[in-house]
Amino acid sequence: MCRKFVALLVVSSMVVLSSVPAFASDDSELILKILIKKGIVSQQEVDEMRSEIAKERPAIKAAEAPKTLEDRVAGVEKDLLSKVGLDKLSSKLKLKGRWAAGYFNSQKNGSFPDGSFQAPEAKIQFTFLPDDINSIIMRLNLNNATFNNLDYFYLDTNIMKLTPWEKSPFTLTSRIGRFKVDFGEETFSNNPVESMLPSNSAANVAGNDEGLMLFGKIGKENPLLWSAGVFNGNSGTGADNNWLKAFSGKLAYNIIDPLYVSGSYYYSGQLDTASSEMSIGGITAPPTNSLRWTRQMAEVDARYDFKKGKTLNPPAYCDSFAFIRLAYGHFIDTTDSISGSATKTDREGNYGFVEGMYNITKKFYAAARASVVGLNGDINTASWNSVTANRYERYSLGLGYRLSNATILKGSYDVNLERKTGSEDPKDSLLSLLVASQF
Image (cartoon, rainbow, N blue to C red):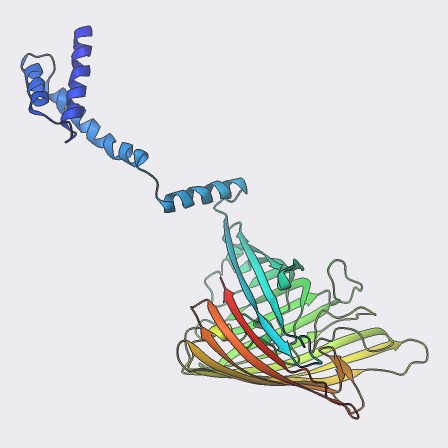
């Protein structure tokens, strides 16, 4: 038995050496034939050993082969995901963001009279997918290279996946947490990266708030888009100051393929003396001497694309031949109670803009916008974008150059006009030159 074991060991060594080109020789093959002829080992045993070695060799080579850069990156990523628990239950983590920085120079009454380099936009968004129904979104606001807050922190749930009607022509998603109020259209591109111009319209109506929103589509071919939400209404984070909540609602539809229209409504609820989360021309504070007040807003938007492309939003990355977009809104700030013998100071006004972009080439585009916000009545004033006036107008003209699909060079000049009886218009027009990117 011992002789047989030694013989098999010798045979296995011969088999290995004979199957490796660098070590193969006539002597090894001759030794194997002699051992078979003397009956020490059978031809079947030699063939079986060769077959087993052939099966194991690829795995051995793969284990011994040096790892590529992709293999090392995948290994590090797997190790990182395991440390934060994302290797469990098929969880996923997605990362995206945007960034913009450049040079700004205004007239003497503007924000940058001496010229200044600024980094006005920086956002990093994390999307955690614990399963195929829920998404948790958290976004860091790092504008001006400073951590400001978490402007997004919410949970999206695909409710239709919890019902038997998942494949119906209806969709329904819930969103709860802190997020952007779905009002108007500019609010989803009012930043230097996604807007076609570095600046926004004069009114720039927008706001983030804590609340619950339901949204979805009705139909498959050309669906009707809708959303409805309830929010705290008052500015800041944390507990609300009043049990009366804010409400927002929106409908949107493509009347014909290149023509998109939407209508939005917002009611703040009773705000007492707190500021509103929804800003109009920079104004969120209550009217003077107000003890209780509410804000109502309504807006209609329309957009028409010429030679409509695949990418529509955000506007800076639109590949349509050209587009024109317009908005008109009306707001009422109602004072229910005032302090002492003060006079009633309700605010009511209108705002709107018309803008357009023309893709000169795939790289170059030209853009322009005219916008206005103001109060009804010549004697009423408000602090529009930090300038006290009855009416605030902004006329913007700019060019963009796409360095890549993600990075754009932008330049624009904004002419700001503030109108108030008996008051001289401050010199605050602005030149903006920046580079913007998204990832």
